[in-house]
Amino acid sequence: MTTPATSPILAPLNPRQREAVEHTEGPLLILAGPGSGKTRVIAHRVAYLIRGEAESASGGTAVHPRRILAVTFTNKAAREMRDRVFALVGRERAQDITLGTFHAVCARTLRIDGEQIGVPRTFAIYDDADQIAAVKQAMKDLALDSHRIAPRAVLAAISRAKSELQGPRQFAALVADYFQEV
Image (cartoon, rainbow, N blue to C red):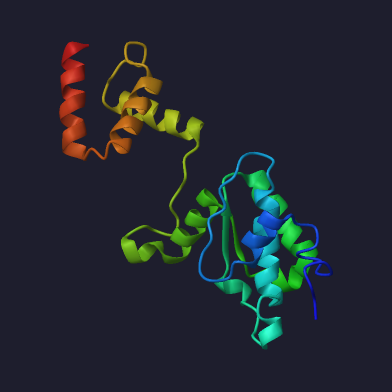
């Protein structure tokens, strides 16, 4: 029988990290400061679930990788997490895990299932440069002077409206007032 001291998954962890890895009843959110081992804990927990160590004593089975979702904030942490899981359980065994940044996981989900909610599979995600170019083009189409009204200010106003959950009509009314002042 594998014990925490001999398990390659549990041995390198401190008691708090081990507690998080051994939690198997439902989802688990890991919140901790920088450098505290969040990525390590999530990678080890994924490996622990895949290898079935949680259930090995009672004759249970491992969790299929397709049933595991692991998300993080940065691309660096996602790469590191994937590499660690591959090192712990092998690339072949872990390739079906859904693992990545919040943005990447959501984009992948929308590309697969987005049509069910009216999002085409071919949607585009605009980076900052794309957004500015789109605003400049819209301003040009509307004959607005980009020297009088900064495209970045327009983009900031759109972002603020989205954050405040303003609908198109509400936002249009605010913008109309602004343009009357300008």
